[in-house]
Image 1 (cartoon, one colour):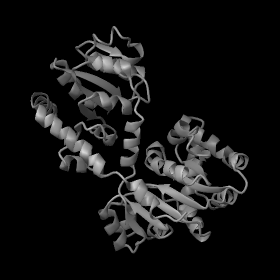
Image 2 (cartoon, rainbow, N blue to C red):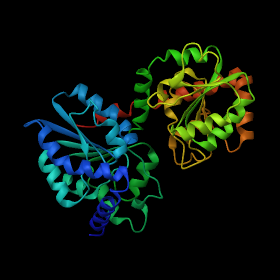
Image 3 (cartoon, rainbow, N blue to C red):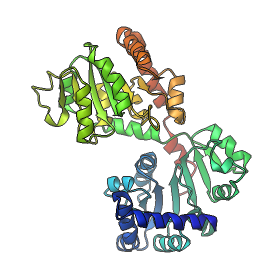
Image 4 (cartoon, rainbow, N blue to C red):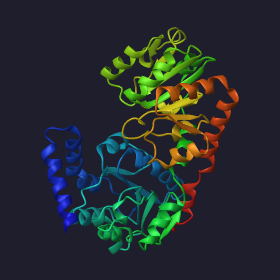
Amino acid sequence: MLYNFGIYIYSLLIHLAAPFSRKPRKMMKGHWVVYELLRQQKEEDAKYIWFHAASLGEFEQGRPLIEKIRKRHPEYKILLTFFSPSGYEVRKNYRGADIVCYLPLDKPRNVSKFLDIIHPCMAFFIKYEFWKNYLDELHKRQIPVYSVSSIFRKEQSFFKWYGSIYRKVLLDFDQLFVQNETSKRFLSRIGVDKVTVVGDTRFDRVLEIRQEAKELPLVEKFKGDALTMVAGSSWAPDEDLFIEYFNTHLDMKLIIAAHVIDENHLVEIISKLKRPYVRYSKANEQNVKNADCLIIDGFGLLSSIYRYGEIAYIGGGFGVGIHNVLEAAVYGMPVIFGPKYHKFMEARQLIEEKGAFPINTYEELKQLLDRMISEKEFLQESGLNAGNYVTKNLGASERILNNINF
């Protein structure tokens, strides 16, 4: 009852916020049409495998599994649902799924209506998705349901004295495919034993992204033969540090792909630069060769741009937490980031493998970059460590498929 009450309160808040905020407004509109969309697009007598991801990041974790199933088992159709507009709006035209839509809120009536329409033959919930009513109903209907790339920590509610209702939800899963042995141990202590350690499917995904990377002639011409640092998903506190270093070290070039690329932030970045720069949208074969800094002012290029660097700086470490370090590490380049990385297992492990380096101050960044630039062996070995870390963690998607009966 408490859980359902919380869902109804959340639904009310979305309705109240919708007139004033674009994100809840898009979510509400998506929920209004979801059942009609399902009825229109569903093929009669088709067998659907349902994947649910909260947002874009979770989708990218599940994507290798979706595409392997689609390739090996074309007899199934794929339904992909999102909770967040930031996932749905970006991937609503994803060709790897037959139907893409929002997931209706986890109210009992919504759950029954949704499952009655689609009748999935199995379901995959990516990482942190634990919707009680959906999971209970799937279990009741004897529809196999799996958790993919999930990770568990002692501070989660499942392991608290008040967490009994949440623990019961975990028993609905036919199998939890977790990232590490620590997660398996925590689950075992609360009586959840249908657990298999497979690793993280994100490693499979970043390898696919690398293989699909675009060639960017202007970026290649900008780089030339210069040692280049790529700053990905940076925020202002990150930029204060690496731009200060860049301004006084003429032996390197810099590519900045900030997390926020609105005009105000781009102007702020430019105000900090003391060396020639060019925006990517205004770059041509002539002016790009004369620039020392390339500012990426569009979306969708970062994962391809990493291929042109020798050093990566990943933003977010002076805010809520670092962004994706694996997209850079897969290219065999050392990764640098700020102090807020501890909740990211891959960052901690990269540090242990000597392929990543956390910094707290400008002086620490300066000492590290000075060493990387002056000691080629150190730079090469650090990059090799990062690339090897990704390579040895591949294969989670394959291990999941080997544990499922189709």
